Image 1 (cartoon, rainbow, N blue to C red):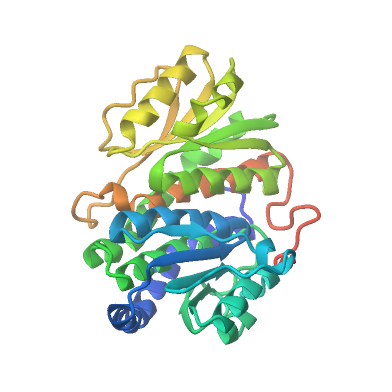
Image 2: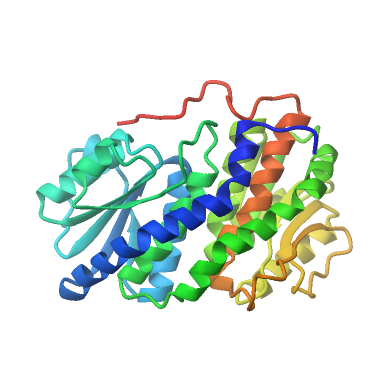
Length: 355
């Protein structure tokens, strides 16, 4: 590996950042769990933008899967533009923002708190406006993120959302959470091969990303990373949604990036891979070495191999953090191969404020 950037350096920092976030967050999660045991919410509403909105999509799946509590993504413009009041009786409102300074996300939290809702902020910045507005805070401990494209704060948010699900009484295995930094470290071993793979996509200007269930958020996030750092027009789809209409996009040599963990989502993903193979799309599959059923003869794959010191078999519920790491590496190296600066995408800034 002879090329690097702040973005790639921050991708490599993720095992340590995840360890810090988990260690520091356990106490906060215990306190929150006590609160929710005494005051169980009837619903969860989540406000976020950008990469944080992709983390919110993950939260919607995780919380509903592990707790059964209905979870929705809030539309901040309902509050900031339409000045409408939503009935938040019994609802816990969560805001997610890397910087904690997203004005419309904070406006949702502020409005919800005025209505008496219990509010939670998830942010990487302990002194941000969000921490002063929210009733309670779960901090990501990723350290200062210098690249505009968020990487370590995204995985930190995912880990914090696992803690939130645990606090809500969800069936989250704490032993599995403690393994996640090790899984992320294993995923970093793919970088050398990914750097070579990125060269094959140097002239790519459009693509699609596909995931299902918990890894749908990763399909959204990989697409965003390629859009903002390499300016690749990317359609991002659930494997199920792809089969309704967007399947017409598939054609020879179309670059397609597919998250394919073994588990309950595999039959749906397998169908997509078969369709991609039938049109001879340029398919890249992100999976791991224990998955022996990848059928496509035309697909290339990034196969994660877990370190010997990582014991146990990773369950589908815990794949999103390690599975996004090679995708982040790919996006970072693709930008460099294209002669672009992934740390400073054109027209973007680290903190984006919208109303």
